[in-house]
Length: 239
Image 1: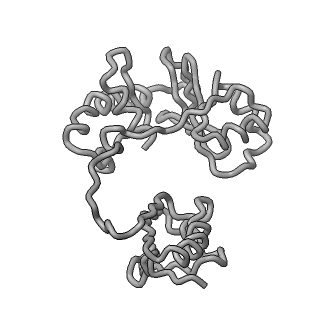
Image 2: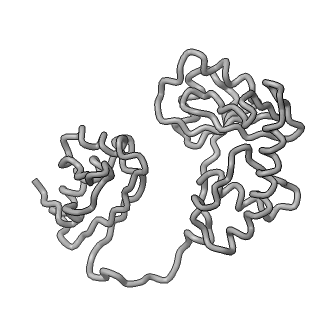
Image 3: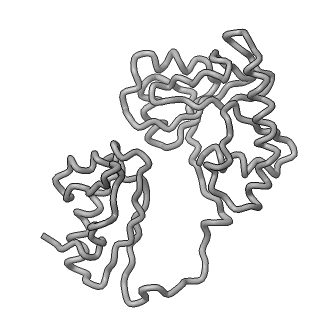
């Protein structure tokens, strides 16, 4: 999502010719036809760029352009399509990590980049705590053409709606939301919790079962979180 929104935002900037080293699977990008058309030059440049890199035989390639390098939880970058190291002029690391322990080599790895762009203030704090000073916090932001104040639909106009959205996993604290909701709903019976929780990785979603605040999640025979039998949030009774 970060890369997609970046490509869309820079598509209209004549001073930026963005391309990615990864193969762009257009079938996996769920956008409207107009946005898909806007991305066509980016996708074309990415194909050409990737093909050029695949022809390289050197283990380390230094580009003449700026490189935004995606970093993993250990702050290590993925190899380029040729299987070796890519360096930009300059290189900036981009990271969204989930664990506080970055490993002993974290500081040494960041020496390849003039700056690390952290996707959250917590990520930035952890990086600085590991002795990495060249850190900037850059939030993902939103697409203002999709997310903006709009006329109310007046659905459930007789209820007080509370929305909760995001990736379903212990780190996101949905069990805390439900625990708080039990108390809130007991005091305000007209309230309704509208939840949009999902996770593409069922094994991570299962971690919510370790919490004593929620009942175990039901799963389908394929191992995916199943909706059959799930109680809606407003049906959760206070203890």
